[in-house]
Amino acid sequence: MKILMLNPPFYKKFSRTSRSPAVSKGGCVYYPIWMGYATGCLEQAGHNVKLLDATAASMDYEQVYKATEDFSPKMIVVDSVTASFNNDVTVVNELKQRFPESFIVMVGDMVTSIPDEAMNSTKNLDAIARGEYDFTLRDMAAELVNGKDLSKILGLSYRDNEGKTVHNAPRQEISGEELDKFPFVSEVYSRHVVIEDYFYPSVLYPEVTIITGRGCYYRCTFCKWPQLLTGHSYRARSAKNLVDEFEWIADNLPQVKDIMIEDDTMTQDRKRTAEIADEIAIRGIKPTWTCNSRADLDYETMKKMKDAGCRLMCVGFESAEQQILNNIKKGTNVPKIREFMKDSKKAGILVHGCFMLGNQGETKETMKKTIEFAKELDPDTAQFFPLMVYPGTEAFKWAQENGYLTTKNWKEWLLPDGTHNTIISTPDVSADELVRACDRGRIEFYLRPKFIARKFRQIVFNPRDIPRTVISTFVFAKYLKRHLQREVLAKN
Image (cartoon, rainbow, N blue to C red; front, side, top):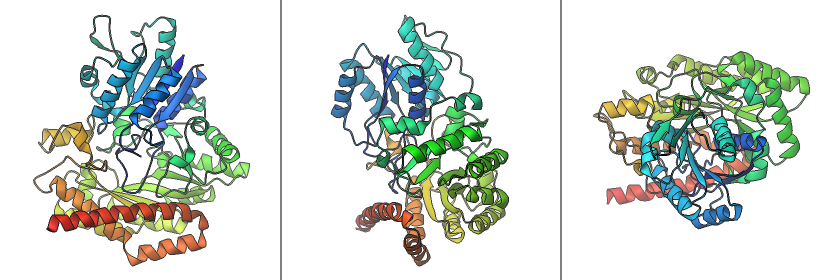
């Protein structure tokens, strides 16, 4: 069967797969990671699949509808997130009008969290594949080919013959052994998207993003993937399978300079991390890779990672205030964060630091403290986000129960230019103050002479850093210009 996997048009370079979807002020453009894995799963089952990433490819609506017409799919899978939900429903309506015989399914954390609202938003939506949807789509495609009995498909919400929404039982999490049998997502990308369309400011360019394990043990209140898609158990691919993909990338995607491992926390299983390092050493290969980590990793593991080619860790520091870290169930502490940064520099691994303003307990004083903390830690790069709460997460529930949500109009999760907004206002900090504080943190961090001098040394002594540094600088300059214009207008 022909199946279209669609990351629908919205803002140019809008990253639905980001944990906080938006047009990035740093120029970051995520791969359609979950759609990519599901595409491989469907192809493995024998279907003819087309993965269309409209936002990364800068395709407009008519271009997408023309590509759909040319492909003539029997099933269309539409990805959706909170900020783009209204837009995505409009796309579903247009697709059903133009292709009435196509079975249309929505996927993603947003529709997983509000399946009834999503199904009621339009009669043109045939089903929702909730949570981790690879096998749900596979089983549904088989039923659509063989007879359309959807009642036994786990993880599926659909309309019965009377038009009523039925929610089937949830699906069991995909195991590590099953993940080993998936096609390499890098191979899927190579056939469906343009590698150079994707960019992480902290990662060497061009890069490729993969997942080596799903789920996260930790319980951070704001993080939506474990709460809505992948769960809180970590199910990982074997070290052998992962390093096989490293070798495939080296052999088949020679332009790729870095491999971004987008597990929520790859290093949560330190024994497996060591096994991966050992497997790389045994094979005598020299991959360059980046991963997400926590600020509690030990030096010994870092040293092994560095020897195995780890270049950088993305780390959620979030706040300098211990009570805020406790409130959001981060499970880290400030003294250990400082020790972690010293150890990472000793091990020779760069760090991209993530700081979030607006969590429970935030005040104007704690925001200033966090910005100063970011400069003290001095990671290679940093990002400052206002708290973005998403339906189905603990953070959303906290904001809703306390009356801190300024809107439930999903499109207001973004500013008019598609960049991050926050719809949280507390008695201590307003939404506008959060956005302005993040702007201030970004400018203070990146305009430090110490930072500028370090970046200059990096590009002189490591030419591989030049492409990502040039792109990042260009994007930041445009952002800084817009910020200064807004400040002048605000004063006038």
